[in-house]
Amino acid sequence: MKKLMIVLFCLIFSLVSFSGALAKTKWDLHLNYPAGNFHSKGAQQFADKVKEATNGELNIVLHPGAALGFKGPELLRAVAEGQLVIAEVPTGMVEGDAPTLALTAQPFISSNAFEQRLLYQLAKPTYAKILKKFNQFTLYSSVWPFSGIYTQRAVNAEADLKGLKMRVYDGTGLAFGKATGIAARKMPFSEVYPAMKAGLLDSMYTSSVSGVDAKAWEVLKYFTPINIVGPVNMINVNLDAWNKLPLNIQQTVLEIAAQMEDDMWNLAGDMDRKSRSTLVEKGMAIKPVSNEFRAQLNAIGQQLRTAWAKKAGAEAQKILNEYDRITGRMK
Image 1 (cartoon, rainbow, N blue to C red):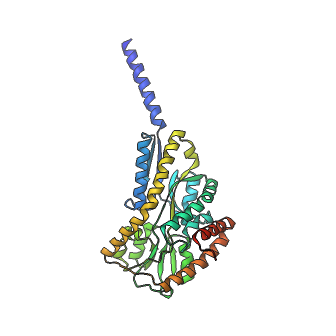
Image 2: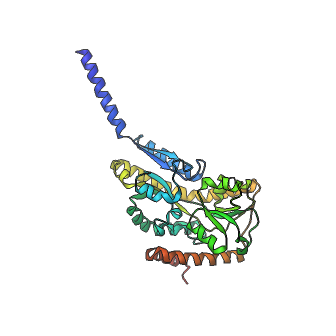
Image 3: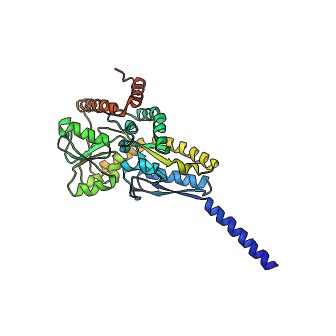
C-alpha cells in the first residue's frame, strides 16, 4: 500500500510538472541588427523583464543579426503568416506591402527628436489599423538617430552626390538616389561590410550608430549628417500567438512594452552623441552641412514627400497635413 501511494504521488507530481511545462510559452524574436546594437540591447532588456514579470511563463528568445534568415521587406508578411511570432519591423522597409507605414521614414520630414515622436504619434492609430489587416500589432517602437551619409570623399553640395555607389535600406533611399544621381542599392545591413570591402559600394546612408556597428572608418573617411531620416522600428507580434496568452500575461507585457517605448525613444539622442564621438576617435571626419546644402536637401525632400503621398493615399496625406499644421510648416 505504501509503495502504491508513492507511485501515485510521483505520477501526480509528474503530471502537474508536465502541464506546467506545457503552459510556458517561447517566442523567437527576429532582430535585424547585431547583438551589440542599442535596439538589440533594448530588446534583450524587454525580454528579460517579461520573463521575470511573468515568472518564466513567457520566454522571448532573441535572434540578432537577422539570424532567422528573413530580410527587412519580408517581415510584415512573415509575422502576418506566423512564420515569425515576433519581429523587429522597420517601417521604411515594408512599404512594398503597406506604403503608409513608410510615413515615418520620409526624407527630411523632421529635424529634431520632438518632431520625430510627434510624427509617429500622429501616425500611430493609422499604423494600428494597417497592422491589424496583417494579423499583428506593435508592442513597442523605437527610433533611430537621424541618418547621414558615409563616403570616401567629401560631400559639400548636391552636385557631390552624383555618381556615388551607395547602400540604402529602404524606398526613401532609392528615391533619394534617383533624384540626386546616386547609384543606390538596397541591401541588408549584414551585407554592407563585405560589399564595401569588395568595392561594390563606396558609400552608405545610415545612422551614426550603424556606422559604429559597421566599423565604417575601416573603409570610409567622411560622415556627413544630412539627417535624411530618423526611422522607426516596431516590435510586432502575431495576433494569433498573442491571443493564446492568458489575459494577465498580456497585461503585464503591455505595461512593460509601454515603458520600453519611452526608454528607447529617449535613448536615441544619447546613442547618437556617443556614436559620433566614437567615429571621430577612430579617425573619421564629420562634415557639417552648410545652409546652402541644407536648402538643396530640403527641396529634394519636399519633392520626394509629395510624390510619396500621392502613392500612399489620402490617409497618409491627412497625417502629413496635421503634422505640418502643428509644426508650423503650413504654407
